Image (spheres, rainbow, N blue to C red):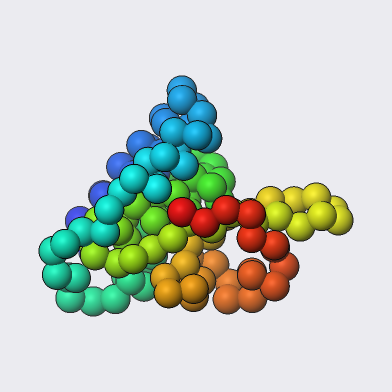
Length: 124
């Protein structure tokens, strides 16, 4: 679990730095270009990786926003052999956007009904 936590924290930092210095386009490109690891999935489920990411957000030195957290989660899951997708959605009134991660079209790092609240804009 400690290994997952450290990797999660470093991926949050990576996404934070990338977003700050290069912008959303580079974060999007990083997630899109990350391939699913060909290694066999490690024992355990994706839930353990998502839990580690949640803990890493608690220990991060500033507030972690949903895009940063979801991009880091998608990268983490892909690196451990899960076919994860970063999904970005929005609602019109009041306008609000949100990001989450899905595996096989099932939300894994947020509430399962989040897809009913936000209309999907992008998936990578």
